[in-house]
Length: 276
Image (cartoon, rainbow, N blue to C red; front, side, top):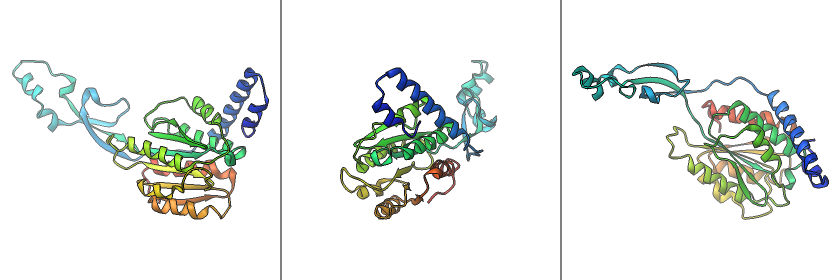
């Protein structure tokens, strides 16, 4: 049903039936995604902060005695001028290192049907496993649209619904998709992230609107291209995008392996492994 969702939506006149079909499609996507999930360990970074700013769930918290002793409030306490407040106590702790990732997904007419359904499964796998990580999502066909910014929190059911409802029209504006992805990449550069954002581009390598997008590739800190299908005519462009984007190209010849491939790539990125 998820595979034929766009086709059904154009032929069914009753909104309540379409809503029911959408719900069934989303549930099917999530069920398939949950069957793929594995375990993930994260790289850690050391942080120091006042006690009242230590996040809930911080790992291995311990008193930073040197920083606390240097705090002016403690000297005030010694002279009985004030009570020691929580922001006068400094703590060391471990936190998951945040690695922003921007998923840029071709949803044009050539990607509809089974490709789009499996892309939605791949998307669901990533978001189920990494609900709190800074993951942005761009979908593009005639034009590009941001489905989720890296800092945005959104229910996964709502996100899958939004993705299934992307128009999936006839043209493929790859240039617009990459420009929009660059906007999300730039928005994460000045947020205290230790590693530059990575971008994962899912496409069959064809574009039927806009200019040749290869001139944009060098602007990406790290661009990974997942090429759908076995067609060789578009392979050169995908290879050029990956090379200029300081990343790599992975060919996804069989549709059914797409969710596992995308999941593996994003998992390696968020675990701090080198990809490309």
